[in-house]
Length: 436
Image 1 (cartoon, rainbow, N blue to C red):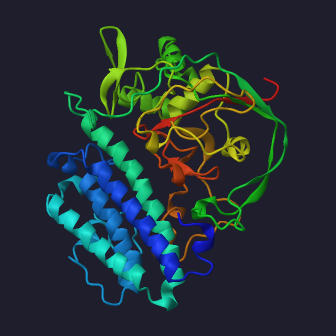
Image 2: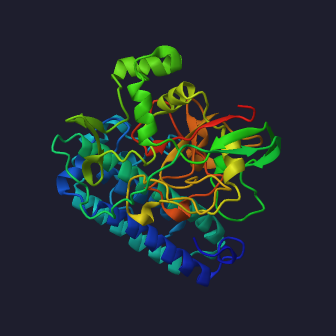
Image 3: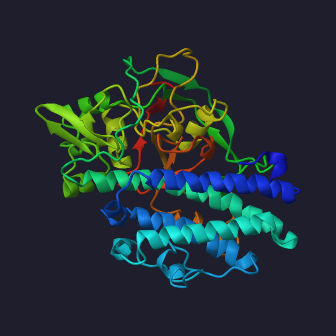
């Protein structure tokens, strides 16, 4: 994002030029993600939670049209009024959204039409930021500050959804065959770091003017008991030992809903795993490859993470514990910029004083339900639907993943998914009580 001094406190024309460059960079990244796709790939919806790539690239443009251009660009004209219905995701106070499970049925507008729509939005946004109405400039930039991270979220969703779409093909086609090869490292035995009991301050500090979503607001004091946390996420090899010990066959380790899901879905391994000639492989965005036993396990649900923790005699960390550990750590890791697009084995530690892989590689399931912080207030108007309406039936994940842009993540970032979800780049690390 533009430097803090050039953001929202005293916006002027020079600052809007910085925002325009940021806008152009984020928008270009979305099209770069889609560049390897074939025209047929854009239309597929492999399950209700997956959206066709064509829908994603239209929806993020709709966001700027609905919440910035229509209210604040005096001469803006929409390309097609029907797009307001087709590409509204879930903003019911704005209008009636098109049903999510049916997005793959929208063959028209075509992919070319959708790219024309993106170009139409980009031209209008550039016009607006070059000569913005000064009385609305602070609100325009506030909404832009939300809209660009929103598009980055959809960039990560594009990777998730493209992977799920291509994985349904028995030929296991690669999304790209030129990804950076993952490093090969041997991972040692799991280690632990201890943290004392005490009062912690959790959540985004509103005196810090850097961007955060509304669900991170409401910084508050929370007493955290003494605990220990693992020095890295659980690896594929460790998770395989759970599988070989009958982890998917014994109800002892599972929450009731989790066990019911295992039986109903027939889970026997993480998503995308397949055994061939006695060797476990998994589908990656580079195609089907043998599982790297030293890399963090990925594409597991909260239920699987929790069951493994029970089997291992541990538990998942709370989000307050996770944030306690991560708050002062460097924001470094295997993000989308590393171009692996899969988790990689942790490098040999140069320091054993802090846990590794807290950021990047895999979103880490916590044991915390996604609920509002004390004093949480939704954004006014339709933008209040962005996060607050989902604070039920979801679990919190932390830390970002191999498909997350590095400038999108922070220690207070709260991601969330339902406990059965597996198509996200989700893994976990263990925690336990200090006396364990």
